[in-house]
Length: 353
Image: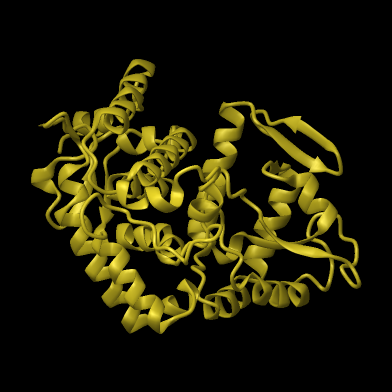
């Protein structure tokens, strides 16, 4: 590749190109042919990986199928569990118009052996085998069909010819996925819920059910109690935000980068906070003061966090967590998000904080 090629590749997409990309996403979700929920999972997975592994340039990005498979398992684990509704027997949501989706079946086998995804992840040999199996399904099905629009393949995310060993996103796709991640997540979740609700195999149970969001996409609270036990010692029994003692107080494990921005449980993103701060911070990013405090905490206690929280089965990668934070605060500046200052106070985040 010559120097001029590199310059072109690193160019960020123009506003017109970004709009065209978003329109393509909308068309795929509205007009694409869906026989399972795999396409939603694939689109959400590559978006999350673009945040974790990418940067805000127009360059191409190569994604390992094992990493995509990990995201698939994260997304489907909770949905593979029996869903209890009203007077009905516990019910496994059907994720395909035909027989149950293969990924669900694979995960259900894992759930017979492990009570939580964290426990499964701790068994490194088993976890790699599961990821390889899911990766094979991802490569054979949603990767081939995601860009199918009314029977015609429109390659705007990646080339099928180059997707044999890993998924290489076209130049400028990584940038757009990072820029529009919240919109893509919301669109995918809505269409996923619609697909599940309208699937004839689910109708007998789900017809009239008001809200599936909580069951399908809310963060799992499993094992956060054990995370809290570790953090209360790490934070010397003090709230991460206000510094008050947590002794004899109600407290919660908070996602420092809010779940609404980055829907994943990662070890370095957890902080222990009192109930009041947890409620007041809600889904806001915390101010730059808290950001610096969080970065310093993670650098200072990286080894302890990695050792203890990874033993609980959560992913713990300091660099990845900090790349996600860097992305989140850039989004906040570019889009003038309100950030939480503590207490009831908030402000618009601007360049230079």
